[in-house]
Image (tube, rainbow, N blue to C red):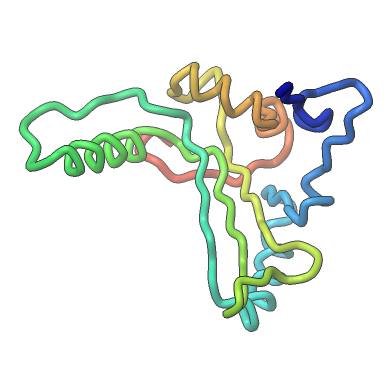
Length: 152
C-alpha cells in the first residue's frame, strides 16, 4: 500500500494552508491586547473551560543533584528552563460544558517579546518552532507583549 501526504501538509505549491484566522485563532500583540482581553471577558461568560499551550525556546539547562524520582527530575528540568527563559507564545482555547468552542475565534495566541539575538534558546527548538510557522522577525518588528523574566 502506498501512502501519500495531503498537499496541504506536504507543502506542495498548489496547497492551501489555512491561516490562523481561518482556523479560529486570533493573534494577540501589544497593540490589540486590551481589545482582545475585552473579547475574552465576554467569551468566558459561556465558555468556562480553557485549554492552554505555551511555546518556550527549548531546554538550555539541566538540573543537578539527587531527585526523589524520574518525575521529580523532569519537573525540575521544566521548572529551571521556564525560570531561565522567556516565553514565546501562550495559547488559550475556550470551550463550553460540552466541549464546543465559540463561533468565530476560539483560540487566542499571545505573542511575547523574543529576540534571537538577545535571548537564550536551544537551536533545535527554534528550528521546530520556525518550521511550525512562528516568525521570529515578526515578534521583533511588531509590538510584542513584554514578558517578565529574570533576564528582562
